[in-house]
Image (cartoon, rainbow, N blue to C red; front, side):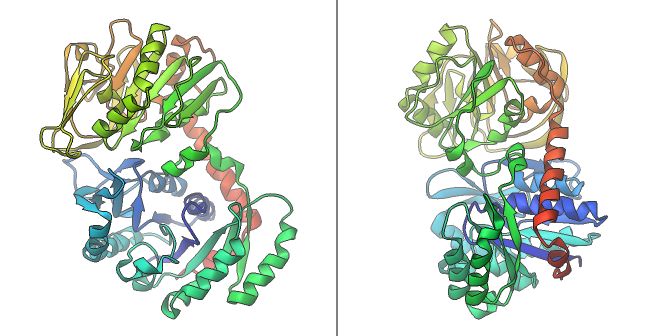
Length: 491
C-alpha cells in the first residue's frame, strides 16, 4: 500500500479541494507517484472517469474536484478516486453514485443507514487507488466535528480510523472564529478520532501572517497540535474549476467587458464549470444571475447550464420570470446556448413518464428550439471526441445525461459525436443546444464562436492556464507550508 495523508476541514468550504490539488502537484514535482482520493463527495459538478476493466460501457461519474486533482497528479482520473458521489436532486434527497455507476436514490435520513453498506466499496476503491502509488492524498467531506453523524461516517474519521490514515485539520480564517473552530474540534472529538490528527494548517489568510503568531500559540495551548503553516489567499485558485455550487453565492459581476454572458443560477445547477473557459477570456464577463434577479438586458449571450432536475428547474425558471427575459433577449437578437438540461429546457416540452426526476411528469419548455425531450431510465456517461457542425472544428468533452431529444431542429445538429448527430440549432443559428459538456474548453471552437458574436482575439490555451494555476498553487504551498513534514507523516 502507498503511504497516505488526509486533509479534513473544521467545516465545509474551507478550501480542502484546492489544497489537496496543490499538494498533489507539489508531490508530483518531487517525482512521487501521487494519487487523490475522496471517499464521499456531494456535488452536481461531475466528471467522467475510467472504470478499470470496463471497456464497453463508456465511463463512470466522479466529482469534478477529483478530476482536477488527478490532473494535478498527471494521471488519468479513475472512478476509484471518488467511490461515493451524491448528486442532490431535491432539498432532502440525492442520487447515489458508487464506483461510477448509479446505485440508487436516498433521502438524507435513509442515506445515513445506507452508508453502512458503502464502506466496503470505499475500502475496495482505496486499495485500488493505492496500487503502484508512492503517496495518496485524501480529502475529507464536511467536518469531523459533525459527531452526530459519526456512527455511520465514511467520509472523515470513519474512513481515517478504518484505513489508519493520519489527518491534517484545515481551518478557514477568512470566515472568522478559526481558533474556536480548531480548538472546538479538538474538544468534541472522541479520543479515537482525536489521536488521528497529527496537526493543522490555517487557510485563506489575508495580510501579515505574523499577526497570527499569537493565534498559533493559543491553538497549541488548547490542543497540543503542531501547525504546519498559514496559507495566504490563493489568487490562482480562482483560475481552477469550481466544484461546489456554494461558490456561486460569492460570484459577482466583474468589470464590464466586450461580451456579457448571463447564466441563470438554477436550483439544481450542474457542471457549471462549463463556463470557466469563457470566464478566462479577457474580453468576456460571465454573470451568474441569482433567483429573483432579471437576466441582464445588455447580455449578448445567455447560457442555460446543466441541471440535475430539469423539470423542477424549468418550473422555477418560469417562476423567476427568466422565460420572459429570455424571450426579450431573443427579440433583441441575442444568442442562447443550452447545455444538457439547459438544452432540454429550450424545447417545447420535457416529459418524464416514469417519474425519474420526481412526481411532476411533464413541463412546458421555453420553445426556442423545435424539439421535445422524453426522460429515459438509462443514463449516458462517456467521454467524447466530436466536431462542431456550425464551425467545422474539433470538440472534446463528455456526456452525463438522461433523456432523448427529438424534433425538426435536430436536423440541424450542433455537433457530431462518434458519427452521430447531437443537439440542435435554430433556423437563424442563434440558439444552440447540445448534450456535450466541455465544448467551451476547445480553444479553436471557443475562439470562432466568440468571433461570431463580434469578439476578436479569443481562443486562449485554457488547459495550459489550468496547469499554470496548479503550478502556482503548489509553489505557494511549498512556500507557506512545511510540506516535507506533512509528506513525512504519511503512513
